[in-house]
Image (tube, rainbow, N blue to C red; front, side, top):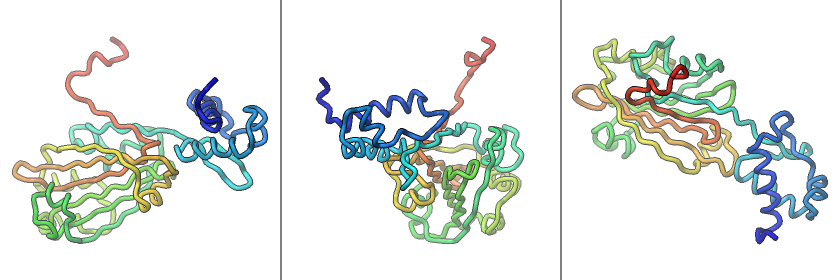
Length: 255
């Protein structure tokens, strides 16, 4: 006999079924009364098990509609190609990658001048509190919130690259724009971390309880100094990142 509390046994059984695709065609779970009969458990016990799955981000609950498995159509991002000018793009990297995956991109912008936060100032090698330009994007894939991206540029860049301070999109992408102004990004340093979202991140990304966010911080470098720091915050349940490093001929489907 299992030593797990009954509500955890309910949650474990339903979790296995969700992971194994039992609800892929119809995402709606059986009613609480049906689950009570199935597991020979009280409604409160079943409700506690379902609440655990809600906290893990596996299901959602709606008053009057019961419980439903969350849609998890994962988007895969090739981080080594993202913003790499050696690979063909039809505009900025986000629009290109999402479109090439057969999905629909949409994003909103905010641009402002503000004092550099400590972690940004350290990466850009400027004084903490000195002015930087923030280009903030709220990005969607098929109308589902996908990420927020906050890119900080040191103020010295603006005089020679004034479009960085414009409130709208830079159609060709900022990396290409800067390269065209003679400021070429020749390398970058990536940092990847996970944590639970702040209340503002949870609101913008519409993440459920128990769903972490993935933080991807990329500092881009010209030959002599850093030129930008980009902090991208992804929904942890809908995104996967990969890198291509070295000779990958062995991955070919023909070998």
